[in-house]
Amino acid sequence: MTTVAFAGIGAIGLPMALRLADRYPLVVSRHRGGPAEAAVVATGAHLADSPRQAAKSSDVLISMVRDQAQTDAVVDGPDGAFAGLAPGAVLVVMSTLSPEYCAHLAARCRGIGVHFLDAPVSGGVRGAERGELTIMVGGPSRAVELVRPILDVLGEPVVHLGDVGAGQVAKIVNNAIKIAILAVTTEQLDVAVHAGLDLTAMLRVLRVSTSNSHVVEHWDHYYAYKETHRPGGPLDILHKDLSLALALAAKYRVDVPVATALDGADVGRVIGSTGASTKEAT
Image (cartoon, rainbow, N blue to C red; front, top):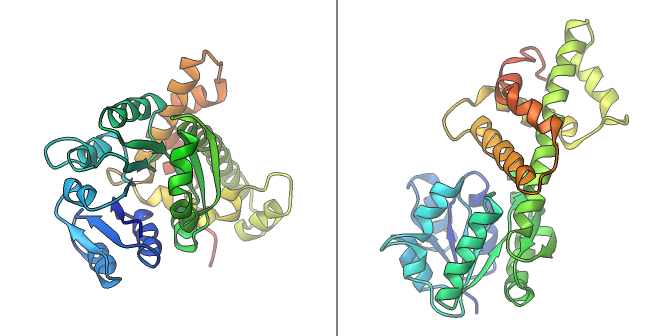
């Protein structure tokens, strides 16, 4: 049976790993210790002291960490996954990263006979818990078919968009649209509240109107962005994603005035500081 290794048991990675542990032999690379590691051990999964050790005992290694720096930490160095992956194994990077960086990882994989896929996800913690993540895949068809049963455990739909990097393009575009919707929703709900409207009633209207969106449907989740200013928190990730979107547009010489304006206005400041009274009553 296919053995899966997993690196990155954070907020989204942990429920992903728990779902995999129910269906596959699972090896988890140690991360920070604490409750997350205890939770995966309780399922019967094994803990490896490094990505290299996890990779040595697996057929497929999934990396679900925050950014490029953390991905480098997973794959590089004497204890990194590249030092442990055997020819024929598959490395699946599910973080949101640049297509160029993924192409670099794919080239390194080819050099050691390893398959590579980029497969970023959308759906957040709830989607991960329910196995309902949208998974956007870039890479060779043969590699996709090798891991499709594993990806099917984690999400629906699993969409193969093209060669390496195609999944990242889809995710970056998705995130840029979400950021724009989040910014304008925050501002306009603030206007409504200051004009004397009840927030819950206003959200009820939006949820059955033409301006409905995932942001509106799950407003309390997105409102929490304001309250998490810690390094590596949602606002930091939002800035990273907007930077990726602007870099992608620049690469293809596409004019993106809305995304550029959001960046110039500091979208994190807009989302993080306005709408102080726009928390829905629960």
